[in-house]
Image 1 (cartoon, protein in one colour):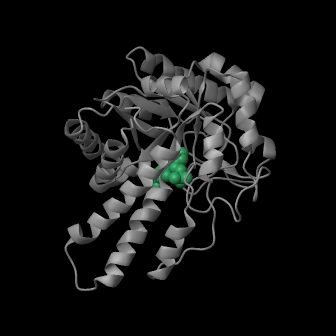
Image 2: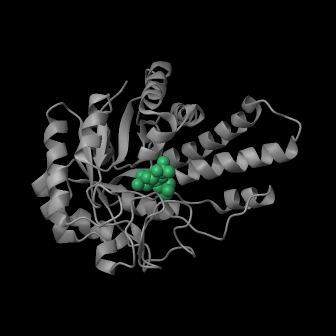
Image 3: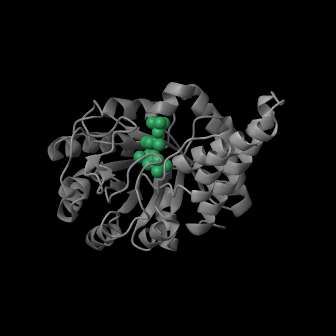
Length: 328
Ligand code: G3H
Ligand code: 13P
Ligand code: ZN
């Protein structure tokens, strides 16, 4: 059944686990996530970005997720809008049936300039007021995602800032987080701790100076009843990079967020973990390998099947390591 995000996050908090929130853009990704959830007995969060809506269209995304609910009636599913850039975008998603929205007021509606704190409070509050009146959950974001190696905000997917930033801008402030949640009444808070979107997060396996898991602990100690969200949480498995390179791909050396670090976050209030890149890497590696080994095949089902299976495997692994098994 379609459920609200709040319901799942509360259950995760009560039972000490975290939920991966997977981005979806097409049929095979939706099927892979559902197969993984079914195999592990996990609840599901599927989220659609602005890019997904542009690629597939809101109607297709909504009906794909509805089809997932129909095919797996025993699995609770959240239909979440990822990175809403304005209250209008969030209201639109709510009207079209999303059970949860992210109001990302950390950046201005242009998705590029860093927003003022007061702007963020105002837009988040506005969405919460509308959403809560009809049982929809709201995730807000405080702090700008970006790299503590380059001191650059994350603009790969269009929601970053220009130029370098200060360490303080790139890490969510603890006292401000408490004030923000009190004023906006958001259900979940995305925080900045040194992760960024996409495959190129770190040039080495991250240590505490560039991935601030300690900041999660400080924020959680201050606002223990707020569900925390980690964006940019793909682990960028080295074996997938190796496979992509082996079969003709060209990807530079790069590192993601290690699963053990996410598990540490889950011990300290992280309940929603956003993952898109890992599914992209898994599908691309499988398709490259298949195409390379079967140059005469041309039926899309032939190569989309191994891609879907590879996506299922990565989703299963995340459900298991985040403690979701049997929680559906
Ligand atoms: O928000 C980031 C997700 O990875 C979505 O990426 O905007 O390319 O769909 P996208
Ligand atoms: P990744 O690029 O690390 O998968 O992050 C996805 C994300 O945060 C979507 O909002
Ligand atoms: Zn994100």
